View 1 (cartoon, rainbow, N blue to C red):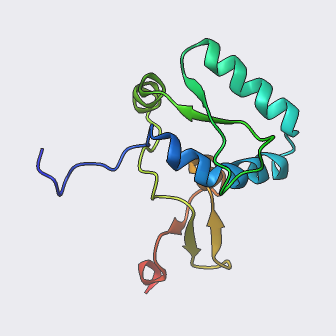
View 2 (cartoon, rainbow, N blue to C red):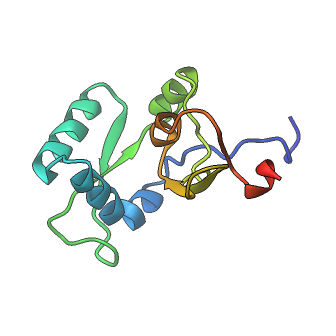
Length: 125
């Protein structure tokens, strides 16, 4: 596979996670998941070898915040499950011929929209 066709996969670099951890917690809160429940879920995933705890980065996180990163095992599992591993794919704006554009944050939000959405308004010309 040449470099132009190589997919950008999810990172297992701890720094990538600590820089975005506040956003992760905000997203969980908006989804109705408390901070305690989020950390509990991460702890459970750790037991399966899918995430590992990493030290908080004092520049981008509060010192009381923990952080978890995906393991390479988790990245392989997500790939087997057919999840999009391109971490630059979301968020993205989708367009519809009869509706206002919508920004989605992940594959689940995108599939929940149903049929008739495109990544460019040019698709409807």
